[in-house]
Length: 143
Image (cartoon, rainbow, N blue to C red; front, side):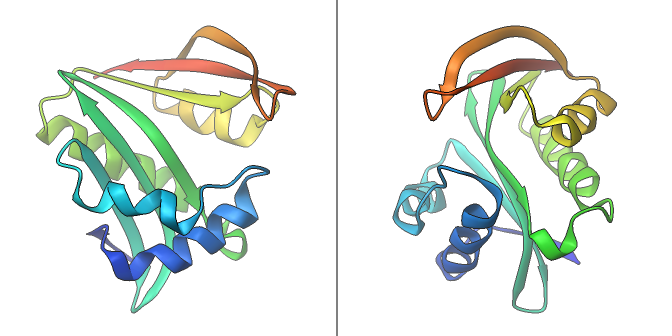
């Protein structure tokens, strides 16, 4: 697997992975602006033409807000999420990012453990953030 910058041709497969991963997924059309936004940094993990994972963040001054991160369901449990997070952090460093943040559903233990393994810390909670049902943990990492 190799990481490439997000292109329009990846959007359909990304939307499929979104539907697998999230109760309220982004649609293909919601990803379109991310392709050309100069403040958006998205990478796609591919094997040949197959999208295996993707993640992205928006740069705001010297901070990055991770907007999406997902791994194809058939590929989970193989360390791909860790590989993807490493890539996002490396690209953030190249963009002079000092801190990164993200929201994660409070019951998503595998994702929370992944983020904690990189040094992310819970610094707040957004009540009923997901589907007006689930709380989101706000996590931050100082690079």
